[in-house]
Amino acid sequence: MIELHIYLKAKPGQHAAIERTYREAYVPAISIQKGFRSTRLLRPYPSEVNQRIGGRAAQCDYEINIAFDTEEQRMAWATGPEHQDCWPKMEALCDSIEWEGFDVVA
Image 1 (cartoon, one colour):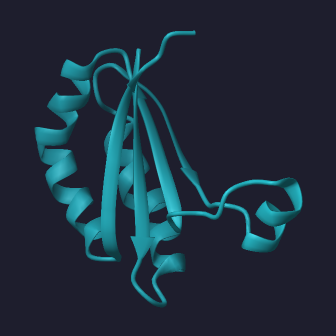
Image 2 (cartoon, one colour):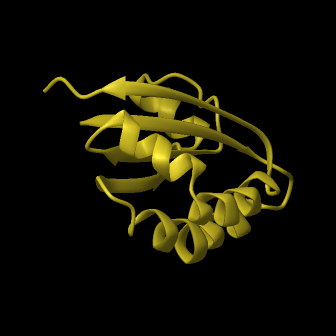
């Protein structure tokens, strides 16, 4: 199994729109893909909470985690028509987007 972690920096005033677009466009599009396992939209703790628990300062406004059986299946999603329809909607709400991939080992 593999995971991709996508880090989003929202444009000013677009936080609610990111959450809505994730629920209404992204989840329905990704969840029908072959090999899809899961997705989550995460919002980092506020800075005062991170300081209290000894965490590092958040580097993003949101993180999307997705899991697929294989990287090949994730790539098929990334180049497929559903992704081409929904992902530009998410990109339009963000100042920056970065990602990194992981092999799940345990």
